[in-house]
Image (cartoon, rainbow, N blue to C red; front, side, top):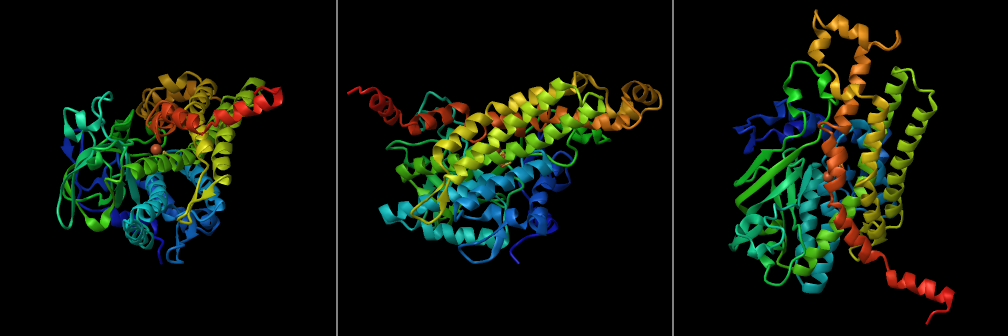
Length: 481
Ligand code: SF4
Ligand code: FE
């Protein structure tokens, strides 16, 4: 059976890693209260894939082995697969209300599959078969794979070679007969600690002379020479407190890691690109396209949960029939479904690559992500509007439980007999979490900067916009030569 159960997944990540948080080395990270919710989130992926109800979206048949696999390890074989991907991501966003971390490696694999095929055809390299072998292992063991793209980049005005510190961009520092040795760092690495493996890829397009940076390879996340530093998120230490209500989303959460690679050895069989400059930029673009498509699913699912919480708090406050509240909920839904529309559209208009795999429509995927850089902010603003100022001023759970202040808070926070004050407390904290707190990383800042900042989408849109064709249309109608 290729599908891991959630428990098997949990057991499989219990391995020694070099991890730090708050300046201290962390052992047995799977028991750490700040980290555990992010593991629960990934376990949810494994859980849903076991359930008949969700099999259609959560699993696929491998074109490499014919086995039933988790969709997160699938190489898209049709536009239907692309659509199912986005629907699956919406489902997981709905179930967890946070970043579920498994899409980056998924998107990297799909980009790398077609790029290595084309690279081998043109250059006579042997990367595609190598990558297939690597990915069959991933499918057969249902491994969680991260994708490591973003370098620290040093001075943004300088090329990699001209940086004061040569490691500002991850690069090959040495080579042996058996493999390569790399140095550098990858920052804001989604789910890196929870992944068994990660695929490292370049962050930029490179010029001649920058071959050492054009490297793509697979690495085990516990490999010798890797140091991880856990990324903070707003209000994260609330997870260390006694109660759970102040956390907001007390079951699930995202995970971002600062990863340092210090003389990490990569065996040849895990190297999928080494100096092929043109294909490095192809890989960056295709990966970004797939990941921008992803946001038309995951952010929509989180948006669904936020709209639901907003509707519930309106009921709790007794204003659910008020026309301006209904109007705000409709506006939130309109924005959210617009995001979904572009996620589905770029999937439905996908195309086949020479490798046989399918890729989303690049223009529409970038339009999708550019919408994602705006709409969740407006949805969160409307949620805050409906929730009221109490989301920013409410006393703690301890005060709610205290013998002295508890009865007072309950007296003044009760809205009606049907709704216990704890329910209002939970909803307000959940909305706070999504719009201001920990999950703001996966709902707001990640909507802006994840899969590339807005300017990156504008550049891709301008490249695909076909302005000359459009000028031709106007000229034809107006008889302009
Ligand atoms: Fe997946 Fe969304 Fe998280 Fe990216 S931000 S890994 S697409 S859930
Ligand atoms: Fe992301």
